[in-house]
Length: 437
Ligand code: GDP
Ligand code: MG
Image (cartoon, rainbow, N blue to C red; front, side, top):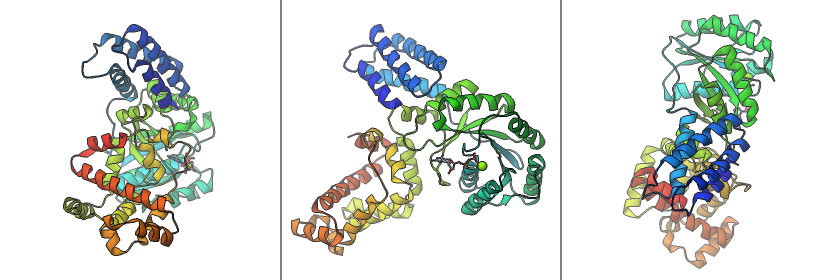
């Protein structure tokens, strides 16, 4: 795991008063090894560590920072820059804007087509059309229809037409005739790069002149991902990269390598099979993630998006008046469940990835909590301080849990109240501090 390795590399520096040439050399060696282990191309890893070394040696140790922190900052800034500066958007200036998907079979093109359509529809108020150009497998066309139905986006397909080029053209014409301002063309991939696939996708591109040609790649395929990206880029000169399957623990090595080899921006990442498992790619967040700091910004952002505003206001009042109770806790849990799977969320908490690795975090964990709360009387729910040993015993029995579990829930309840107080009190910084405790 790359973040473990980097942790170890940073450890070399901790406790040292200054960055000397010797411990920088040691540290950069560790960093290089960590990058290589994460499938980062050798040349890139070497260049990267050379830059980090030069910067580290050139810097005076700031009095306020520990050398380890300074080194972490240098590594993070470099990683961020390597992965491409600021987040790049999608060109939506066309009328309609045509977005063409390319990539190997199984990379996630069809899934991502749906995610992107859903994203543009819900976040950018666009009216997208999906076009099915994978003519080789009837099941692929059906799959896109299933996706379209899920997100309420129409799909253009024609099982009578086996020519992907004219299909794509017909799809764009259909979009124009029906007032769609975005067209997302899903294409066929093969298991490996081959001539026919490249010719086909290039022909589609020439026929419909898309605003965006996106290359979709499975982040779990490591070094292969880099070779595939190179091959597609040589033929298509694509506009951006989509990294899929970056769920939970998948390492970010592919992001580093692909960006440096093809020098095209990574635009989005896929983090799950569901239609809302899509995130804009932010290099600095990915650098944090690679460094094991956790993607706190994403976590907070997602939390903010999903928490029902009115609910939040009500709860805010209750917290201020100190009348926040278990009924509110219950509705918070229901909100959290809406945010996505527990595994995803926990993976974003700093340090949690490591602490909880191998542990089975399933969404059923909530069921016990709910059962316990349901076993409380309304009075107990609104005034948790009433819960003495006798009541706890009764609740444990009633909910089929143990007193330990009831106690644990009480502890979580207090932590959550505290956390929500902090979130009101001013954003991510406090929350981050708390999560690290
Ligand atoms: P295509 O052949 O390129 O169209 O790939 P598909 O969209 O059919 O995806 C192949 C498989 O990968 C499917 O089982 C998807 O559910 C899965 N998949 C796609 N994107 C993601 C992702 O971001 N995370 C995970 N875990 N699975 C994904
Ligand atoms: Mg497909």
